[in-house]
Structure formats: C-alpha cells, structure tokens
Image (cartoon, chains in turn yellow, red):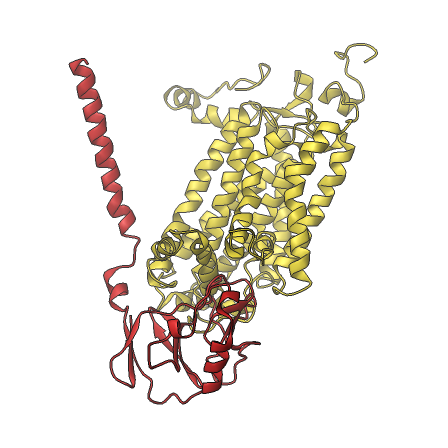
Length: 424
Length: 171
C-alpha cells in the first residue's frame, strides 16, 4: 500500500517496459525505496538507523561468507584456522576484524534503532507488527552473535558457550537432558562447535527473511515521524528517492567513518584478550564476561542471588534475563497513551531518559566482576528496568497530560498549514 | 460422513503423523553421538594421592576432582547440621562405604559450569575448605556441598566404582 499521490512507475525504455510486463522487479524497487514511496518530510537522523542496520546485516553476510571459506569448524583446528585467517589469508586480518567489529557496529545501530522506537512510540498502532518483528530480529541477532563468538574456540568462546548453554540446565525437570541435547555432549566440544557454525551460517539469512517482513509491514502504514502525527496529505511527504536516499547515504558515510576508525585503529578494543588463548576445558578464566552488547542482560541474569519461594536463584536469573526482552513484545499494549512522540509527552520523556541511564548502569555492572557493589546495583537497576515497562509506562500513559500536537506534519515543518481548520 | 471427507481426513492425518515421525531423526541427531558416549567412562589410578591432596582428571571431557580427605576434613564435613544445607546430603551419602576419605566429584560448578578452584596445588579452597568457584562466587565445603553463593546443588558425584583399592572407574 502507499498514499494515493505516490509517483507511478513509468518505464520509458522499451527494455524496461518489456521487463515490467514479465517481472516487475524494477517497479517493486521503485515503489519500495524509490521515487514511488512517499515518506514523511520531517524525518530526523534517528530514522537513518534502519537503513544502517540493513547495511550492517549485508556487511556481516558478505564478510561472514568469505570467512567461512577459510575457517574450519573442528575443535582440533578451529583456533589455528582463525590464526591462519589473521596471518596467512590475503586481507584475512581485515575481513575478520571487519566481521568481529561489524557485529558490534550492528548492535550499536540496532540499539539506537530500538531506542528511537521507544522515544517516538514507533511501536504503537498501526505499527505493532513492525515492532514485534523487530523484537524477533533482535532475538535472532543475539543468538547469531553468541554462536559466532564461540567459533574461534578461544577461552572466552569455550566458557561463554559453557555458561550460556548452562542457562538451559536451570529449567526444571528437562533442563539437564536439554542441555546435553543442545550441546550434543556433556560439555561444549566438537559436536557443539559444528552445529554452532551451521546455525551461525543459517541464521543471518533467517534474519534477512524477517527483515523483509519487517519492511513489508512498515510499508503498509508507512514510516512514523518525529511528531507522531500521521500523514494527512501530499504536502506532508516527499518521495523516498532522492530525498531519503541522499539523507541515508550521508548517514551511512558518517557511520562508515566511525566503523572504519574502530576497524583500523582499535580492532581489539571491544574483544577480550582471553580469547587469544586456545580453549581449555580444565581451566576457567578468572573473569568471564560476554561481549559488551549482552552486558545489560548478563547483569540481570546475575542480579538474582537468593532463592525466591520455591524457585531457585539460578532459574530466576534465567527467567528474568529472557523476560527483559520478552517484555518488549507487550510494549504496544503497555503504553496506552494515544500520543506517539516523546516530544509531546513531558512526563514520559523524563522516564525515557531514566531508562537509558538504567540500561547503561546495567551494562556497566554486567561487564564488571560479580561482586559488591555491582551485584546490589544490578539488583536495583533490574527492578527499575521491569518497573519501567510494567508499572511506570501504564501509569504515565493514563495520567499524563500531553502537550498540544501540531495539526499536521506540514504545520510542524512550515509553521502553518492552509488546510488546517481556522483558529485551531 | 461422506466418503470424500473420510478420504480427506485420513490422508491429511496420515501425512501429519508421517511428518511428525520424520522429525524424530532430525531431533535425535542432536543428542550425543556414539563416539561421544563411548568416551563416557574413565579409569583413574589414585595410589599416589596422599591425604589432603587432590587431582583433576577428565571424564566426559569435563574435569573430575578426586580428593583424599584428611581425618580433619572428614570430621568437619560430618559436624555440619545436614538440615541447614541447601542441598542436604551427608558425606557418607556422597562417598562409598569404607572409602569415606575418597571424595570424587565433577569439577563443574552447578551454577553455570565453571571449574571451581581448590583441587590444584596452592589454589584457594574457599572459606569452608572445599572448593571455590571464581566465576560467581559459589563456595563448597569439604564434602563438596554448596554452602554459599548462587549455585543450587552440591558438586555432582558421578557414578563410579573401585575396581581395585587403587583404581577407580568413573562412568
């Protein structure tokens, strides 16, 4: 679907006319990301991050497929094959660093994308399905990133696999058999490494499939915008091409500067030195931490140190960690405010910034050793995290008095809109 | 019932059952394979382990701790009020009759699977003199029972038997 004033695709060249009759792929592209797709005229740079996330996915798939040509998923040679990529393969060092740091860049971009959604209420009707699919993509990304990190078979790879698969053993009754089944053994070994490699190769394409659904669902109501006021008329929109292809292109350039700075000057800044030690099942590193993008969730996992009623602390931690993401699925129905954008919600805005601080605190604690004061801080921050979604958002959306909304996007941009009712 | 409906239901049901049965090998292939299971028993010579010493051996690709307890450690373990424990077990239940000094456990923390310290020479044993897991701070006593920290269970005692006085077969 699109707006009635969308430009129509009119191929002039006979070849393109011929193509349009047989397989209207150019028409599809024109209507999806070309001049045939009208987009709100007031999108700010926060709206660049969807395209950037798509770029990161493509980057990871390209570098990943190349790395897979040189990598061997066998515990005997996996670590050495990664060193072989780093030392012997032409440009291998660059491709591997591009892939490892590409994962970090992907998560940076996606976290901005998610928090853009939190602020502007992008998850609200009629865009709930876009949001739900986005959460699915995020879960798939987490699984993919985790399994990818196991592949080099260094100390952090091995012990990360041990600890994270160990989470499943917390499940009552079926936990231990499930754990053994997932690993294909009693501890991470060849069977686990091989299946992780297989799934790590598969899941990005599953992500790409869900991304297509995500964009499909997006193109039905069209993009949201910073005012949260729906498009009413042609003057509220501009064609995607050339306006947003240019804006996204500029944003991509800025992103690439940052990404290349990381890749070429600090390629190991976000990694762990322990992962340059081959996996040793007999010796645990003194301080196990996951990659930075898992820290907030890891902090929630470790925040539970006491048994609660009949539920052991270990199971509570696992449930809480998964719930921290699953609660996002309910977000469109927890925030009942009819006003989308945080710009017009003064009370919501304060709690939004508090949530960002809370997430950063959780992240910091998750990267620190499991000792005081970090455990206590994690516990407080974890309680606040859930309170934000389950208590604060429903209450705020019920009692808050939002600021007046502009009549239309045109009025918000130009200061007046001739179609607006007089003396509005 | 019309003949056509019967054929329809029968065909779809048969295809459905067939589809589900086809999943079985796809699920079963994920379980430990025959070679992994074949490695599932280990023999250990314990003749050189003096009282107070311990060794780390490998069982199912995981560390297993074999510890020769001193009389003091045994009496410490037996002095504990079992009902006060998170995972109540006596030392006797965790060792073989007549061999109470041989404490054989997995070296895998029951929290998230790290290898606790305390079996190697000079490693910290934690405040209860048994094992200490550096990952998340679980503390085990001289019977390898959980006393403090997030782990829910005592260190697991694998199946084992003394084949002779100096050889233990685990698994």
